[in-house]
Structure formats: structure tokens, C-alpha cells
Length: 267
Image (tube, rainbow, N blue to C red):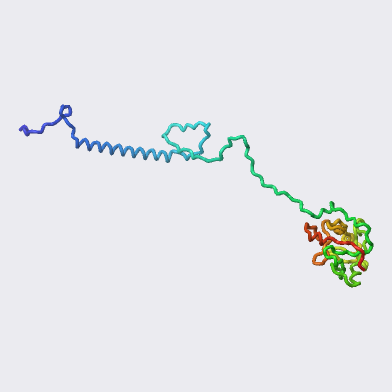
């Protein structure tokens, strides 16, 4: 039997009064948006993998005048901008920078410094007595005095002390322009271990040199300094009332301790 059940009329889009079903259209848009978001996510993942795996580590930026190299066909990649380096500013003026130099320390010449042996003038004491006693300048009551084989700076109150403080002044045993001091016992004054001693000559060249002292001008009027012949720059001086050879020093004490008066014998 034919189906005579009445059916609701169907609306066709070409009919003038058709209206779209708003409920169905809304669901379709949501599907389209979801698909677009999924496609965008996939595209972003592919692009990120291409950047991480296919892009080499950034190299130093080429000079400005060098054209960038052609990477050839492939995925489009965006290189990271080169890091900015900070350098010293270039000079724009006409002055040329000069490297700093160490300050030089001026060398001052000390006043009253003892002159070098080659520059020191020989003493000109005038006619010297053949028999002398040697008196200290800064201890005027003390003389060169033989005690045993040592030479001290002592007072000489007794006749025996005065005889031990008397010497015969002769030409230098090694250099006639200098002095040697002969003792009453037949020996000479010589330095040994840089101390002044009274010893008999052994005839050696060393003894003659050790017993030869050259007079030099003192900074004190009338006084004489006595420089060792074989140790230039060392002068006889008293220290703790003992006669010794000491290197020249730029001090008032040294100049006074090394200044002696060659005078008539006290004996």
C-alpha cells in the first residue's frame, strides 16, 4: 500500500525564504577553528625542528663589506643577530695617544761625599817630622797606641804609653808617594783582617802593600785621611777606640773618625 503518511515540508536552499540552521552552522565553525589551530601547531613544530636541527651554530659576523654567502635552496631560517662587541672608541682627533712611562727617579749627589780615590787630592801636609804621633781629631786626648800587636786609640799618660804611641814616618814600602809607619820594635803598622796591627815584615809583596797608606785631604783643616793602597776606598778610622779599615761613608761621624793629625812625637 502506498505510504500516505504526511511528511513535513523540506526546505531547499534555493527557495527564497530559506534560513540556515544556526545551531548546525555554529558547530561547523568550531570544527574549522580547531582544525586551523591544529594545523598551526603542526606547522610551528616543523619549523622549530628545522631551526634547531638544520641551522648551524652562529659564526662571527662577517665584515660589513663582505656579501652574505648564498645558502642555496632549503628551508627558510632566520639567523640570530650577531652579538654587539664593545671596543675602545677610535680617536677622532689629531693627537696620537702616548703610552705612559715609568717616572724616573733623579739621582742626587750627596753633599760632602768622600771623593773617589782617583779624584781625591793627595794631602799636602808640608814638611813632615820623621818621628810622629797620630792624634784623633774628635778625641784630641787620644793617640794611636800599640797594645800587644793591636793599635788602639788611647790616652798616653805614662812615658811607656807615649813611646808606644811614637812612630817613624817613612816612604811607603810599596809606593814611595805614600806613607809607612815603623815601630820602635823594628816592625811596621799594617792592616790584616781590616784591623791595624804592629807586625814585623816577612818580606812579601802583600806585607808591603798592607803597610802602605796614602794621605788624602780631609774635610777638616790640617787633618789627614789615610787610604789603604791595596784596598782603594777604605780608610783608617777608629771605631770603639780600635783602628780599622772601613769603606768610605757619607756621614759626619765617619769623616770625623777618619781624620787624624800627624804631629810631633809625644815621647
